[in-house]
Amino acid sequence: MYIQPITNNYNYLNSKRLKPSGVKTTPAFDTVSFTAHTNVEKCSKKGISVLIHQTAHNREPETLNIVCDYAKKLLEKKDKIKIISGGCSTGEEAVSMSMKLYNKKNKVDILGIDLGKKAIEKANSRKFILEVPKDENMLNEFFISPSDSPYTDSYLVKSKDDGLTAEQLHFKTLFKEFFRPTGKIIKPSLHERFYNLIQKRANNPVLELDRIEYELKPNMADNCKFIQGDIRNIDKILNGEKTDIILFRNSLYHIATEGYDSYMRKPKKNAEVIIENLMTKFKESLSKDGIIAFGEKEGEQLLDKTILPKVMRKLGFKPLNDTKHHKSNIWKVSE
Image 1 (spheres, rainbow, N blue to C red):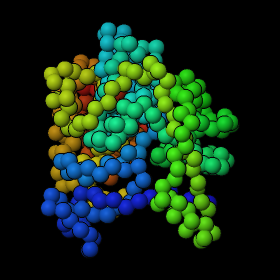
Image 2: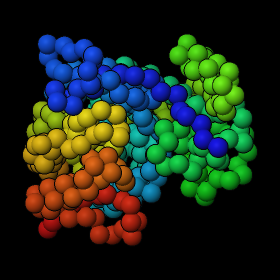
Image 3: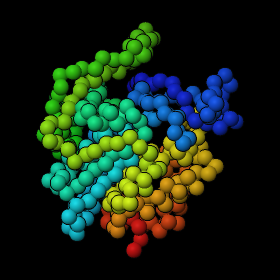
Image 4: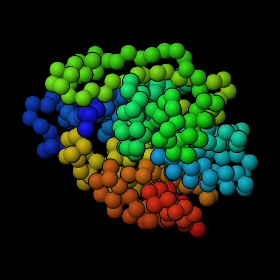
């Protein structure tokens, strides 16, 4: 059984030759219609016209655990470290890092940066929405296992612990320590209600969600700061300072690919140059022994698995060699 996720149509920057007929354009750039999750914010900034705020608490936990372990090693040499979460969206990644490093929180500053004004406002509100199927039996089938689901943190408010991994159980315990429900239930959008009605009339399975708002308890994750900005201007944001860890996960394809929807996308002609320019800035912003962590499926998102490793090695980076996690995509400047 398969349930089509709730989607909506938005505009995405594109070249003229790929633009479907009938799609309107603006004087600034050509656009195409594409499908994405409803948690989307329109934007117009250096080749990006829409931001897909697809994130989750403790997303790709293996990578986050490796980064946190490395942060602890850095703190054996330093009094304080700085972590930047680029493309931080509504802040779940940064907060998850703070939760995992709670016993070191006074020694760790975490800065979340995102282009989206609404996303940053949400992150600074310290309130987060968890989307949970009304039928909890559907959690295991659709939400816990798929690593690319935007709802992989739904288990955090699941009433039972059956089917959860040791990592999920541990993070669920942390979540209870850090968060409390506000009592607010977010109603489904008109689009979602209409979509579900159509599905029911067609006798198709319908995935109905409860959207429950949670807020951080006082003084929890208060070492996280969020600002609206462009990670491509990291040098200006840091203003001469250095950072020890940069997370830029599952975001690179927004500036390095183009096309219509996820099935008709391709790397931009100058994708390698775009990535090299950004990674050069990242390298110049890193302190000694600093690392950069990408998403575990970055190659698939870029539609060319060779581009990023080629650029990183060219700039003198090497894969972080103290991990056996085969999906990790973490790089350190060679000695």
